[in-house]
Image (cartoon, rainbow, N blue to C red; front, side):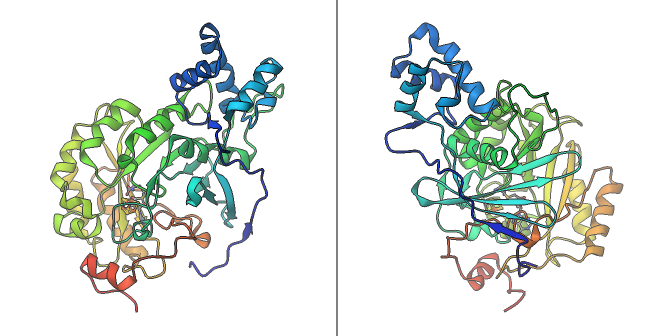
Length: 397
Ligand code: SAH
Ligand code: SF4
């Protein structure tokens, strides 16, 4: 499937907006940090709060990319801002548009690193899948990102910047004076791109605060889902400090199999993880935990697995997202057959859980879950090594 050529691939020539030397990027700062920065630049303290409010609205409500646009600020003040600050986003290196409308962005950030973000339009919502790290320190054996060697945490600016870039590209910023259009293109955000968000907790939290802020991007905490492989000590903080919804990469029903698929299980096993999830505050039917379960042929997809799964999660308000494995070159697994996935879904459904099978999106552009990996990162562990580490024979040469 990955051999299908992308429908559209265009290298954009948008204005380059990587932070310039010496200029501090205002994107991604909390309100308090922005206020501090404005005061340090010479803004009188008694005006600082109001200036933050104005600038915040320009950046996050109107999508302003330079200070000249901020017409309710005095010209001299705008010039002063421009001497100290910038409003920078990651640079779009390429954008691919799938025949199903999915858009995959390859973005360049400081240091020449690249990360990906994916926009998935659906009838009732538009979901932006964003990255939290370059690569990932974890090595889940079925995940393409996990084969990437290079890793660094994204800054809050780089995390928020992915949302700004998508709105720029979709032309979603409101036009001053025009009637308010309530349809949102980017209505939901999922932290399911590259990286383990709970290993970059503070930056992810600060970024989500900006994304949720009602004077700006205004995406509600209930439209944000953070996916973790199971970093147990940070799970409670996700509820108390961010308040968004939680998804967990569960993927197996015995420790023996989960150790191989999601190696962090050796540190925090299934029982420990489930205990942390049972304690997740505000858990309710309307704010269920999503259990992500990748369907791997002959590995975790039996009827017995399905029955064990519902026994394990008994009592947790949950929905089970079944993800047909997205293959990537050299992957040591195969996708379960469709009939098998449906039989599995049926057992879970009969036990009373919603069990949607996540239709693969953007497969022709390798935009689907777990396939993300920057194109420039060529050094990867060989397929045989990945298979050996997973304790399995490669499914193809
Ligand atoms: N690191 C986080 C979030 C990013 S991965 C996590 O692991 O939860 C987002 C989801 O895609 C996870 O559930 C992950 O396990 C799943 N995934 C990874 N590789 C995949 C693949 N090749 N096919 C299908 N799902 C995959
Ligand atoms: Fe990292 Fe998530 Fe991939 Fe595991 S599945 S390697 S945690 S990105």
